[in-house]
Image 1 (cartoon, rainbow, N blue to C red):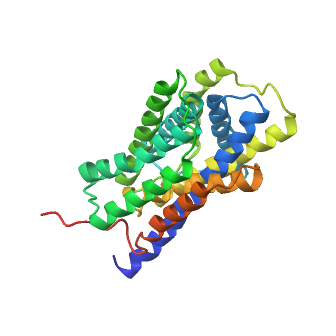
Image 2 (cartoon, rainbow, N blue to C red):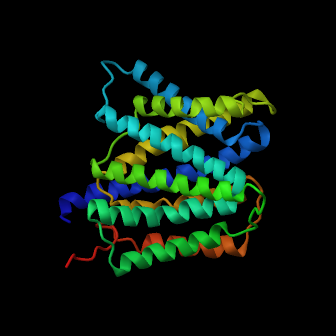
Length: 299
């Protein structure tokens, strides 16, 4: 990688890291909404996409001149449908299987699916050090989200939803990487909104409890930061960051969520959280700063 291409790679790595941290903050915001509003996981997913679409439309209306997106219409629709699908599936996994198991299966299998897909479809082949980075990252994730596992009758459905979410995330990541990056624009969020609307209506789309102003504030935050901004950062970053590297960096999401849960929601600081955070940060630190996961030469 030449000096001319190192700078965009580093910039895009920062964009993906920022998206992961924002998604972690979104997890904390969703937890607050589940507690205080009576909204279900699909309704929260619907509102976050709806708010993102409205804010983006307002921003485009206030901008002088015609609003133009550099993302092809087909790519924008794929991104919107994909992110709506794997978001909803993840929240359904958490609802049925519990936060620990849902997060572990979704985020733990994601890097594996991405690594396999990147090898088969994109020719991105991680070398031994690359495999070691993925293994260390997954070990950190296992420690980070380790906890009581829901063994209720919905566990199998929850695990299935988590695998579906991981497959959806992997597919969108690989597609975006294959087309050289993209942008979550108004078309993307409109497509995601339409996908989630019938499920949100079936679940109950209006808040049933809690004060209206705080609930609205959390929904606006969820729609702007972890949705509108984070997805634009993530998809733009995939222009130069290999899919496998992005999958490892995104594991910063549960770390950010855990830190915020301790700092803002009063959750207990545990040994698993401390050790898991250190292991996960070690894996991210092992990623080269001039390229993606170390790649083995084809023979």
